[in-house]
Length: 202
Ligand SMILES: Cc1cc2nc3c(=O)[nH]c(=O)nc-3n(C[C@H](O)[C@H](O)[C@H](O)COP(=O)(O)O)c2cc1C
Image (cartoon, rainbow, N blue to C red; front, side, top):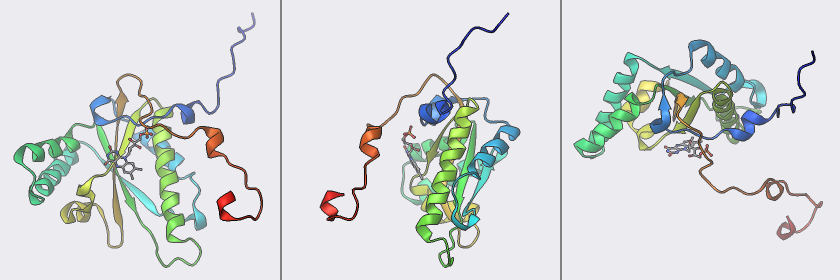
């Protein structure tokens, strides 16, 4: 017997349906080590001028979450936050099932890839990483905040010359998320270039 005719699955489905899922809506299980490797493989497929891979990821799990919580709490206190706010900042490290720090390694003097091209490569890698998580059934969200500029937090993650971008929180989403912002329609996004003209025509 032939299989019933099913409409073909949209190959863009994971790309078109990804939304960020914040910590409040994340539960166990977090991505498995194998799934994290697949997400990292997807990150490495992002466009990358000169193949510099101007980023790296650092997984924060298990006991390391408590150590990150200590750093977040100390940063909150150092920046004059109340005890209650410092406790909330602790929870930003302990509540997500898993965190992955995103660290930029930008080579400002590279002869081929400009600084902005390297940041674009990082952004592409981050998007691929998050979309891969979504395609595998996980949810996640990129978070930063002023703590990425706290000296103790930054130096706990970064080698000389690196920049701490923030942390991707990851887990299994509870329910289906919705896009957070109104965006232009695709036809608004996709303009036509009319040829050389006054910039007001662009
Ligand atoms: C580098 C970077 C840092 C971000 N930091 C924060 C943050 O600290 N807090 C926050 O609520 N959203 C932050 N966002 C935005 C969210 O990750 C998310 O993209 C946004 O809420 C839009 O949701 P969407 O991805 O579903 O469109 C950051 C995004 C990026 C790319």
